[in-house]
Length: 196
Image (tube, rainbow, N blue to C red):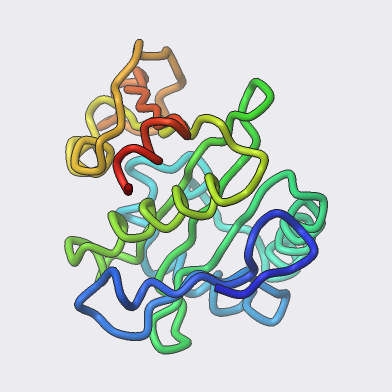
């Protein structure tokens, strides 16, 4: 784990949490924009089933560069932490901690490139994001929201000990979606008890 002046690390090694070696989270730079665009495009059919930002025409390279710059600004301010998921320096997905609706609340988001799914990567990534969140002084509660029909993703918070709370209404962006989101929470106290 590499520290910065922000509450969040710029890198986090997942290799000891996976059988697959050399997996790490690291903050993205504009130099990653082309690869990011290519990986999203290659996985768009799967991503578009659940991710609103993956619908329709994908942004241009310049748009991704500007988006990454915006993520870096928010990272430097300690307001969110967006990471690329890298396997031996090859981008295979993205994830992040995003400010929630109340003080001390952060929301987890993640996606993994289609060829890398069902290999434990997403579970390891969410575990890493919990470590990052609760090692900071900012997070008291971490929330995951998953469309009710996305049964595969719902296994992750269940496996990691999140507590399911009241479902929330949302928008449908694809035919497969329910438009109802299951909500899963992990508190600092619960996480501390689980890892000690």
